Length: 461
Image (cartoon, rainbow, N blue to C red; front, side, top):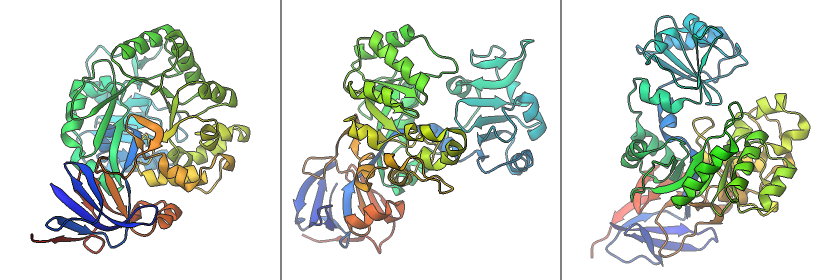
């Protein structure tokens, strides 16, 4: 398919026509006659946005779950669960400040006889009630907690993959999620699942309209429908892996020609990653620190002396910032998902949402990186604020080089574009998805807000 997007402004302000053919930008200037044309009416065209770290299946599944994030007491949780339909319940975003860490007995009181699977706000913990435990095999995985008498407490730590295999479930609506993400201007996604293998890859590649990068384990195959991304290391300080074991996995990733990406939300997890990289021969270009939730000045010095890229989650400053404001000492606020100091240290920096554990809206992430403002209006370390342009570029990196130079609008580049109402200055001032009028992926118009913004004509030869 060949089409032209007419009367669009580059971020330089120049008014041009873009011709798209075979999934690429084929010309910039004046469109030929005889093409399907979209009149953008002077709107701004930008490279499409890329979420460099999210969990697609979990984000889609959240739509069919009971959201407990707004519940502040047990009565509210019980009311929300009682109002949910279905013979089985899935609840997410439970805050342990409500009633501590629940167990199966507590969940039995909340949910009655319906099987309930509840996830905490961090995503690290699932808790099952007695009815849900009865649906599982007798032999439980290592992350299934037991009491002093050997009975399951119902708590499963970091066992998403095992539960996904043994818990009866329907595939979430990925096509709906893909459309919602396109409306936000997302043309590319990096799924950060540590256990992505052939089955997960096929499911995602068949359903999502976005260009995909898939992290995963050693079983993840190469495939023309997606880019095989870094080998993912899930480092959890609650049950820390041995650095030698991590180093062996790093070596396996190197043999596959893959970079390494490690989950590092705490200082201890980051230190373990450093130790494993050192044992494996050092970091290489393309290796990534995922989250970087707490990076001290000393750790930043280590990172800046290496080829590591940091893929941060600025949305957490907004979504979880009030918790940080209340629980993290003020002197450490600058270490939370830091941004400006990372770029000034010469470290490549990119961003992802970590959805569903934070909002999937990349524009909210940009505003959080720019403003460092929490949901209730607190400011966490204003010296870590990024300029609006730098915040936008966090989501414009190349899929396999997220912290490098942003993608360009140039002949031969992929036709992955967004058209935003207003001037480029307007876009930077607002940083909001409400300005996204259209999203093009591979030369195909995936999302259009309405004919008032983009008018379609077909000229005859």
